[in-house]
Amino acid sequence: YGKTLIVRNKMSPDSFVQLSMQLAHYRLYGKIVSQYEPVLTKGFYHGRTEAMRTATDKAATFCKTWTNPSATDEQKLLTLREATVYHSSGIKNALTGKGIERHLFALKCIAEKNNIPTPGFFSSNAYAKLNHTILSTSNCGNPSLRLFGFGPVVQDGFGIGYIIRDGGVQYSISTKHRQTERFAHTLKQTLIDMGKLLQPTTSLKVECSITGKQNFEMNKATTEYLEAYCDTYGEGPQSTVSFSSSTVGPPPATPRAPSAGFARVLQKQSSMSLKRLSSFGVDITPKEENRKNL
Image (cartoon, rainbow, N blue to C red; front, side, top):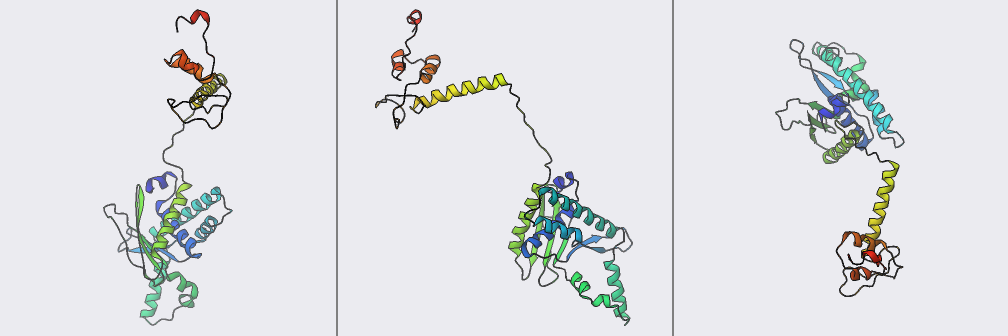
């Protein structure tokens, strides 16, 4: 599935895919890591990009809920929707110039260039961890491209380029020292699991209404047919059939009592002779007034 199905379920395709990558990494390594997505700021003069970080508190709740065996499908779907809405709001802020990461980076570069002391925030562990991007991702929306990818930005990270199409999502995953193939398999299974909770774009509902009288007649006809079929090979609940070398079908394991079911059906539906019908161990002699017709 791709963009069409996700949009029909009233979620952002890009936010959906971003969260799938974070969940795949969490399933594989058990950690919420820094994830980067560039957002174009073409609406501004000389605008380039702003950084969007997928690793939010909503995304963390989403990952923990989906890896909880006791979580219900309703809880999983709720956290998925909340995380996608929160991610989409961050994308909107970045598009409209309300992001902070590029602004902070510019202040740091200006300070270093002019030998101005920088605040301790820029040397903190939190800022260092934020900029150690394990999952560096980017979405290329050009449908004419077949594949799109790039390398990781840190030694222990992944570089993931993806293209969201109407009927599918294509990934290009690269890394230097991590388990690329294993991550790809985990991501595929994650997308399958997420897709199971989505409502299909089309559905077909088939109903059959049968009255009590119709149901009785159907059961009666089915019972008679099955009894007749089983008696063909001596497998009915009450038949004793004598098989010879010319009789078609395997011999019965044990003898059974006579049954009139098969003979009755054959009398109605076949052209077998009366003598042949009598060989099935049932007295089916017709009434005197009908003997001449036979």
